[in-house]
Length: 276
Image (cartoon, rainbow, N blue to C red; front, top):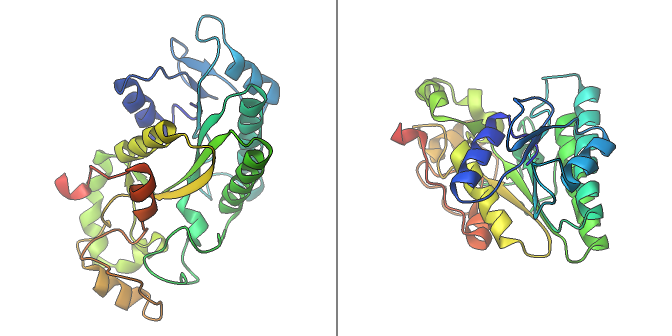
């Protein structure tokens, strides 16, 4: 698993190990030891060598989970973000297929829904059915990574490659801030008031690994609810009055539709900020 020392990766590694999987973490930084290999993912030689086998750590892998990336726009320059993410993802996916690893789960992004939603979405709740709308070089890199996955699957018909469009990753210690969002709905309108508990992100990764059907699929992965206490009908009427509503908004149900992930992966979020 790449990105094993990141906010999401740390939790995914822990949860996968708890479920009985042997996890080898690959990242550019982290403490050396069993289950971790320091790798510069923009260097293809290091990547294919690390996936193929490393000393007494492992002598081959059954699957790859690729979470490593500069995780959002604005952290580094636009060009640095794009170049890092594209190079790392190409290297990981290309090396995995060259080594015959036929099960890959990769982190895509909710930003492909058109985030931040300065241009309103075509409908609410949003889902994977409308064309991607990248609005930053970060999102553009994720869009092109999904297209890379599509072509690799076309070239390798037995390959299972799943892109998980994660919402804004949160841990329980982040939830104390959530009640303050109610005062101004515009603060979190940029992603339709969505989030994902990292533990549920780990659940989605595990389900995608275990499903492992040949082909490419993309899934929005979010919590079952929004970050708001205010009802959805009120939020949408205030912030997106001209946007068509498709189906029942629910009171606080997620507006980043997870119906496809529920239907095809068996994904069901278990964690909510409301419980904390």
